[in-house]
Length: 352
Image (cartoon, rainbow, N blue to C red):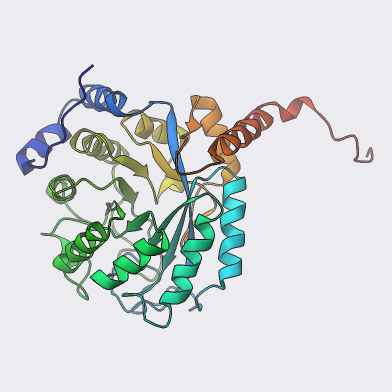
């Protein structure tokens, strides 16, 4: 089978046409493309930790960490390195192959960079891939992170350029593109996607995918988030996104960026198992695994294990992680345990 060629010249009309295909036709096409580049029953698993929470100077209307809104979130200092490493070790034991660290900053300060670089080195020493999101990066900061061993840098575009000013005014769309360029120049991989359901229209949604697909190099990871509405933010009462529209967007992202990991990201707690299964069928092959995504909740690990077991999905094996085979076996054992534990009783417990 000849793999679908990577393109960087998509038009908005082409993306619209894909989105408006009959649902079954769209999913069939997306699944066909997906199978050309990936094992359809493997999903890359990441865990995300907030290493510095709250009081961000940016005014992103969806974000509970913005200092512009009263969401009841307390400001926290940068986490101690030992705590970050302990969280990474626990994530690895639960089956995660990548550990992502996020800080509520406009950009990292000079005084914090040494701590951040040490975090990268120590998490890497566990045999895990590393990812960070720290806001905007200059070329020098990107080089320092790359030299420390950072594998991925996350910096989302969030929405289309046309709709961007309705969501964020404290930094420009070009600022975000410049950070992505600095990350690429430093030799790191890019994690970049957006948020659906912020009041944007269909053209804004597919327009974001056109922007991502027409970058000089597709992001290796494309997180597709469904807005988690947080009380106190300007978007707390925005209209809910139609679930089938979200699944369509996953499929269009898979077709337009065939070799990228499409991550089913924030908003999964609002999705039932059937919706998540359709997202996997549409080409999603990466998830965040654990109880929280920065400050919003995420399906608990046990629920993910059970869903993986029902769907016959296994964690993707990564060459960068020397002990990934052990992690895969551990998660498989956990899935089997969840499926069969009703057959056993704990002999150490006293009878009632």
